[in-house]
Length: 455
Ligand code: ATP
Ligand code: MG
Image (tube, rainbow, N blue to C red; front, side, top):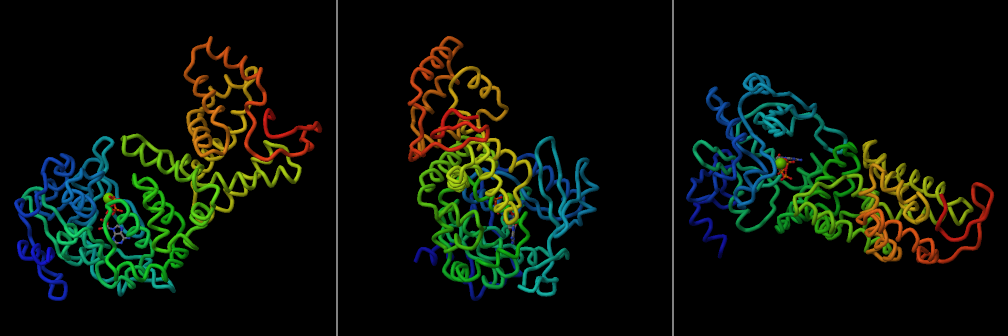
């Protein structure tokens, strides 16, 4: 009923009858986009291209967000100019990409991606044995470009000069019905690029849209195809998902779509560990809150959190086997990083950030002498400390230790001295909730009990 009404006022044709080579054109009164949400740099790029005689539009996620009344986080531009032609028009423009050539146009820190309309032929493009498109860089017409995009709501074009939206696939209608619909045959489109399965989940969680049944149906069966996608691409998409501001909802949606098993070893670990669930939930909540507050999120912190309980499990096992605290933690970190790095293509920097955060944890237990002052000077103290607070909040360790560190971190020199005196007077206060172990041999040959106080 509502759909019928929308179709009637918008004059959008029914799915079966839609001619996808012709756009429905909507004026400002019909689409309601606030032109103030379009950045001056986006207008600079489209108008420079248009003045040079080319077509140019804001495209993709930015149009979707504009229609939803949300300020787009970045602007992608589509044009009929070739990458070389685009490059010539701007002072700081760089052609990048192997699989698809695009141009990065820079204005100060602001980066805009300019893409030439892509041509029809996913059919004729070279593919791997599973049907995944390997290269695909033919130029085409706008309606062909629209056909190649993933979801109807991501396939609209906005011309800031005329304030018109061009819609080839009923995207406006789907936005209003809050529906994610794949363009073309979903099964084929997932086969061409399995990353689209992660994308649909991310958009569903982020926008709180429903996945249209035909678009959702093949996912459960086709999920393993993700394994054939080069790891860096999967990693990029995972990072987008985790940094979307709706990480928790995304992971819940992944589970709902049956995508958490066999998709990535990371997700198997994160979503299946009962003990870690509380910790991961708190970490993702904190991440989502930081993004909502406009703060940055470090991928290292994020992955360190997601994998912490796996580290913890191995750490305990190594110690039970006789390794002392610190070496055991390093061995556990190595194991976890090794098992995740291959599939996840964790960049070296992220891996070393994770290791820093993890290996700082036992140092928080040493609250005597100069150790706490030294730890405060650690370059990544803040990340390690935030991580410690998460461990407290999840019930893994006593909240007293987090409270002590907060007071120490925020306190003046006098307060710090008092805190040090109180901590050394009450050594039992720092004990973890872990079951007590019998004494084990330490690396230095002495004996230690429990997990505290060892460096
Ligand atoms: P976000 O708000 O997260 O940036 P987005 O839709 O802009 O969402 P991008 O990854 O920036 O996502 O991609 C820009 C546009 O390129 C998309 O809107 C879509 O039209 C197209 N696109 C991106 N990835 C794919 C894909 N895997 N298959 C088909 N089209 C894609
Ligand atoms: Mg985008």
